[in-house]
Length: 253
Image (cartoon, rainbow, N blue to C red; front, side, top):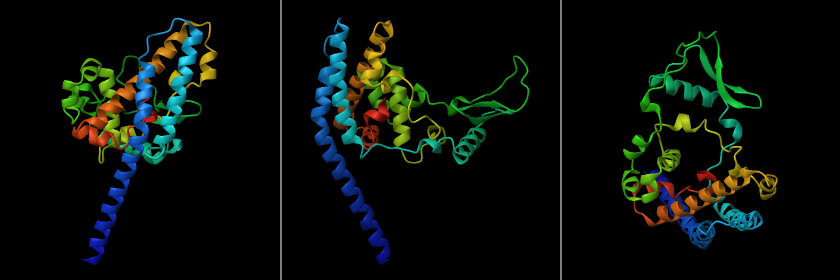
């Protein structure tokens, strides 16, 4: 009996300490979030040099944000998603819930990470894989989740289904015992998109119309992150209470 009481008290103390740490980080982040929102809502510059100067300012703020968020950011070794145990769990979950992919399997391809490997000759026009809708992370599923009140009321979420899906994936990732955990566990931890480019790498795009699009994309995602950070910390919605524990710039991008 005494041990149970001690364990319960230990868990309560640990939770209190975690909440205190989270609130401390949030207070230090708040002025940086305000600064990021201010920089990413400035009128668009026509001069590329000015655009790069602004991007440098944005990067500096993001660097400070990610440094503070390091304590609460969920990180996993990159090789875990490609491990046989992770792939076996995902395959089992898919099949138990009605997916069919006989003659194929998920495998790791050197230099390309995960992909679908055929184990037999596949005839033209034949069905390769079938996935029931209930296994898919959809906007419909998000609207039936604790996100529903936010999706209905928030102007950004109600008009951008792709953003709804991004937030929904994070909600399921941060939840305990998510139905989609076997799928989420095999998702990449980083991507080869402009959102991961350094300023020097972006400068290599000068002279190409791609640079303008890249800067706009980075600016948009940074603005969305700042917007949702504020929303998550000012709402008592059940989904927001789950999200605020691990919602970071690295997770959102």
